Image (tube, rainbow, N blue to C red; front, side, top):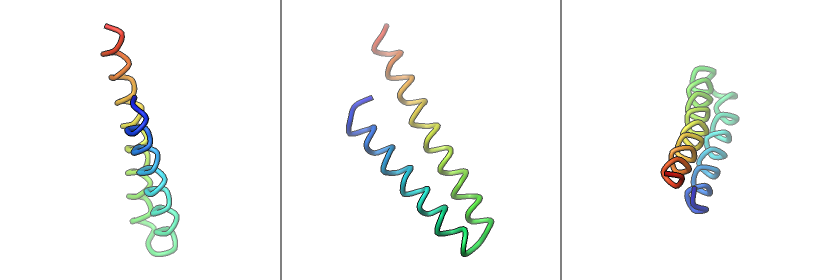
Length: 58
């Protein structure tokens, strides 16, 4: 994965984690939604990384 793309996924995940932390005090359901989005974002980063490695190998 290129460095700018890795930086994007890292910053986006941190922003979602911050939104999760802030939303805990407002509404539990919104916090759960933000948590799920955070996990999906981190998972998408791993998927993109794996696909780019596969393309590079062969």
